[in-house]
Structure formats: structure tokens, C-alpha cells
Image (cartoon, rainbow over all chains, first blue to last red; front, side):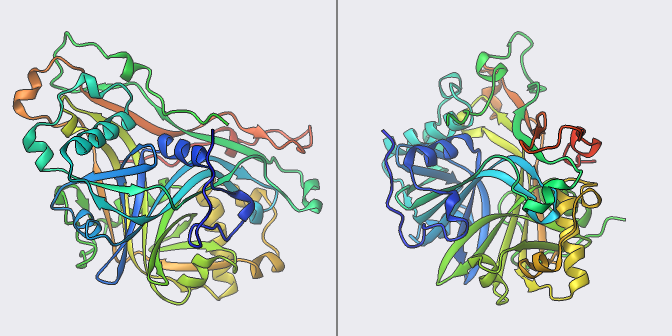
Length: 222
Length: 222
């Protein structure tokens, strides 16, 4: 059953609140379809926004990276972060320039990231990263070894302060503008996969597996 | 001719510097292909990352919104911002989980945004927004009227402190892993347009114009 999260002061959507949504299953679905999040944090009094991959397990978002990363070194100190995931669903073409818009789904998460130190939880999170990118891949490839685990920092961020914002559907023009003789509507946009490209060093006997051949992002189900 | 920007301390790419690029034409091309930027700023000591549309004219990025927007109200006070645009070009599937990656192009801009007060410059920026989303649309639709101009805040951000980061190509596995009998390579990803959807109130005589019918994002040319 969908759970609803009571919005905190900072997650309450101020602009166009009719587009806001605080239901966990909507938030999770957007996070699961996205590939990259934008992590916002403050270092030396300066805002940074860094794109990075992520994974989700239940009500926790995981990000990872190298111990040499400025972002990960900053974040594991327990500072405030804002993580945003945005899916572009379409262009909304109105009869006036002013009412042009985009259909999108976005999630904004506030919180503090925590270092994942438990070895088993870390490995589970790394599995979630790989499976987030391409379902079924984890069991096809070599698992991380001890050395690789040591070279990877994993941070967890609770999804307790999260909100979604969604716009769908047709343009909304001013009443008088519906008479303007110009096409109006939506151009749907979607991140789509093209034909897989073999690694130049791929052994010629190896075929493209179904996980790769049939690749799509998880679809929205509402 | 491509101009090269001397990287400032904060735009110097620290991690995987071999992926860094400071040439203006590379930076502009990524900005022109992207549809949404993620604007990072600090309000009440808290980082925010908000997705928004944008436009570019020469070495200036423009964002816009309602005077009621918390982001625009914060930004026009001349605070530091970090604006990031990310294009996802493909999934990089290695033979080990550890070496999985993504092909991407991203631009990170640091600076302070300035309110555009000149009416003509504001209108030119609004034209750039519309043309950025769909080339040729501006002259097809009704231009902003006086009331709409007053209801729109436009901010400009110089592209002087910007850097690009790009990953392309095949996975890079550990030497011993090339023997693992699993498919490796790249799944190219692209934001593609589906069939346009007519506005339910569209007059039946109006056909889909070429600007909409042949819609694509500007392609990379390198």
C-alpha cells in the first residue's frame, strides 16, 4: 500500500503546489527510473551540484565513489545535502511563448548522508547500484573483491524528507489564445536505448544477453 | 575558433581530470543539447538543488521563473550558485561490477546570477528559452505581452567559470578480467521524441508543423 510522508518544512513544495506529491511509491518509482541524481552540498561556503549514479533499497538512497572524491569526503562528515532526480517526459507547446512548459517528474531529498561501514550492507548497496543501472547484471559479472570494496565509499541517505513534483498533460493557454491558428500539444520525450556496441576486446563467441538486448528503464505505472 | 577558458580553482576538475574539458565550444554544445539544468544555491544555510529550464546566448546562461519562486528570489540577491547540466550518453557494462560506468557529458558552472532588467534583453532571453526548447517555435507563437513580461523574472549567469566533464567509449576492465565469458560494451542512450500528441482543444484544421514533426535535440558534432 502506498505510504504517505508528512512533508517537513523544507520538503513542502512552495511553487505550483498542485504538482506536489509526497507518496512513497511515486517517489520510489521516479528514483528507480532515473539514472543520475544531482547532489547538492556546501563546501567552503560554496554550493556544489555534482551528477552521480545511485541505487535505492527500500527507504534508503545510496551513492558511492572514490575515497579521493571531494564530494564523498565532504558528505561523509554528516553535512546537509539536497539530492535531486529529474525525468524529462515531454515538451509542452502552447499557443503563447509564455505558457510553454515541460512535462517532468522530479524528486528532491533533504537529509544527511551516513557512511556505510558494515561490509555486508556495503556489498548489498553495490549490488543495488548495478541492478539499478541494468537489472540482472549483478549475477552475470565478477563481484567486487576485497581491494575494490576498500577503494569504494558508500553513503546512505534516508528517504524520509523527500517530495516529488510532477507535471503531465496538455498545455494550458489563456482562453483568448485558443483561437490562435498554431499547433499546440505535447512532444513526448524518453531516454531510449540504441543497439548495444560490443567492447572491441569482446570474445567473438559471446552473444548479447537478454538483459542488454531488451534494455529499457523501468516504466511508470500510474 | 574554439576558445579555451583558464580553469579557476573551483572549476578545476579534481577527480578523473583526464575527462575534463575547458573549451567553450564543447561547453556550449553540451548546454545547447541539454533541456534542464540543476541549480544549486544556499538558502538559510541549507543547500537546494532545483531543476529548471534555461537558455544560452553567447557566453551567458539565462534562467527564468515566477517572482514567487524561492529560487529566483534567493538567486537575484547575488548569491553564489552552481548550475549543472548532465547528458546521459550510455551505460558502460564491464566484466566486473566495479568497472561499470556511464558515458556522459556534464557542465558545471559557478558564479553569481544577475537580474535582467533591460526590457529588450529580457525579451531576447525569453526568445532564447523558447528556441532552446524547440528551434523555430518563437515566430510561430504569440510573443509575451507586457503583463507576462512583468510576471517573469530573468536571471543571467556568465559562463566564465565553467568546466565540462566527458566520458566516452568502451569499458576498461582489469587485464585478468578480459577472460571472463560475459558480454561487455556500451548501451547507447538518447533522449528521443515520440509522436506528438495534439492538444485536446486543437482546431482540426491545424497540422503538425515541421518544427514539431522533425523534432530532435541538437546533436553532438565531435
